Image 1 (cartoon, rainbow, N blue to C red):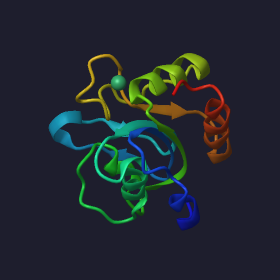
Image 2: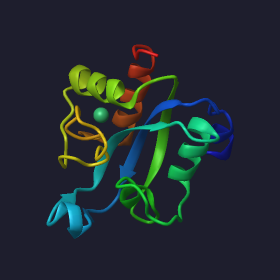
Image 3: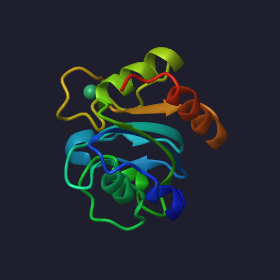
Image 4: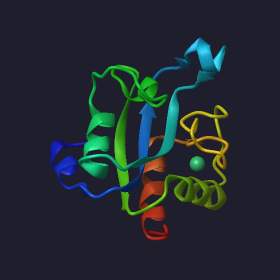
Length: 150
Ligand SMILES: [Zn+2]
């Protein structure tokens, strides 16, 4: 993700999907995910941003290499473990709709139940695994761009 791309993101509230390249296996925090590992590979993460600065501010934070961990997803987007390689912003969108759409259309699997979805009652997780290399995960984002509601 270039600074130029980040500048183009909408400041509106809504939802987004991050394409994340994880380059090493990640041992998750024992408190909630004892013994669970996220294997190196490609992932999609659905989130929402309704605070000040909207989607732009939230995605910028996800893309920062160095940050104090707050959300589950921070474990995958902090250097040197992994990085955000592409994003789909959906102003006015809903993270759960995006997640459902991705699971239904691409039959993506949930690597760890509950990951990123602590405050969600309907999704198995807000992180989905995408088989293949970085080009596949970026292509999935490009395809869904034309089909998402919102
Ligand atoms: Zn959800």
